[in-house]
Length: 202
Image (cartoon, rainbow, N blue to C red):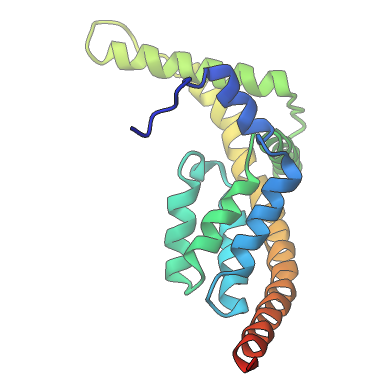
């Protein structure tokens, strides 16, 4: 009953992840309408946006940004829906930028001179994936486990990425929360005035 008459192909689905069907502007307007209609006080909405945006940065949260953001918002008494909406900052366009900035900053903070390019990131992921798959098979056979790719991935990618993601994550989250607070306050005030004016009509 609820199935599409013409199922989406993987290519169409991937394109929609990069560029929404209605356009980026329409998607941003939709998110703004959802934020300004949240019933919570503005400071709780801003707190939710803060944790939601921050969840996009540390690699330890990859793939589970939404539940992590919702849990953090619940623990910090922020708006859970605002936190979930904040995780939408991470997409196929912004994620490579976040990764490269965090990697370079992490290597700089750790004092390592290893310059990692996009191709280097993919190569490290591929080597780590091959090691994981080989070691999984080795656990049920007589093969010897390989750790070189995983060790390389940890030292060149994961640990520098983790260290370097904290500062950009905090700065970006703070800026988004700072921008959200007055905007949501103004939107809720205007909505409240319109509601009172509507009730006052004869």
